[in-house]
Length: 406
Image (cartoon, rainbow, N blue to C red; front, side):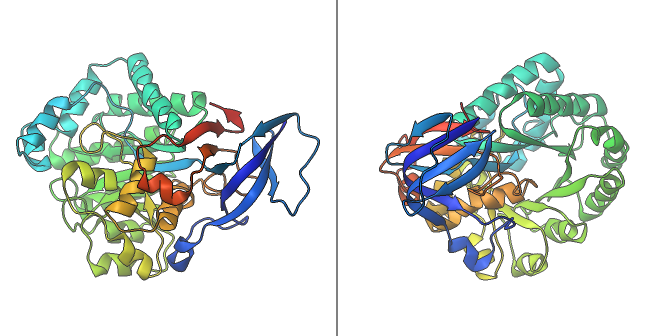
């Protein structure tokens, strides 16, 4: 099946084959064609060009973009969207002045979600989670990393991983799965006993998960705990992705780098030592401005990372307690408004670099021949600056995943 998109005002996000992430000055580059066309064959980007190249004439279907922009769909490399119920009561606690840590100390937060998930059937958990996946797709996201971490015991963590696996098999979005058993200490465990339990879960988790993650932060898991868990994950074939430096400078970045983490995520609290530790590594610094917005905590020092020659990714952290939104367009806008990134930098952070941070930038995240045709077609008159500036005005005309309209 050959599908031809014509009358494209701007084809944005063109990346040459083999470039898997952008760093330093590359973060300012967004290659584009004006007055362009795009050919999709069997769900993949087959070719593209501008007015200087003849438009193919052998397509099975022609889509008139009517002067709109075509860009790669967003990639969200950090979510917790498999959860049960709602934590709106904690929203009122936040309004009344309780901190994240105070809510957790009262039995709320992650443990509250764990209790709700335990009482929810696997079938119902899948139904609720697929609603969130559909919502994210409708807002332009085509690739999603999903973590476990609300089970906090072997049975419920495996229930979550099975649900994520089912989503992976049934959603048109590209899904990656992360085992985050070390999200908090499960009820009925000592701290040391729970770290042991997480390590014992690893072989079963690896049947479904692509990555292993640890909440290495103040009040949760130490650097020593994290090293033990990552070693168990490596023995099971799981590459790390680390929660680090949300609540304090935790050492999570450094231990993540030491164990070859694909990404270190959050980074609201950063010193120059974290930036230096990431130089010359394959680890992607990933910042979650939705959490900063919702919790009222600092935003990551994205510009300092880029000035040091690093790339950054931005992700939603979609979860019921600290970032209840999977709107990657809003994440891009926060990158510009609060983190003072240019629209080009923010765009690269929510497409190619976020794809890299979930290990799929060879498949999605840019307009590149051979990649999946996961694309957004905008209404006429939109550009990257307007998408961030007019951050809640409707801009999407249609979404295509694997070349099929959603």
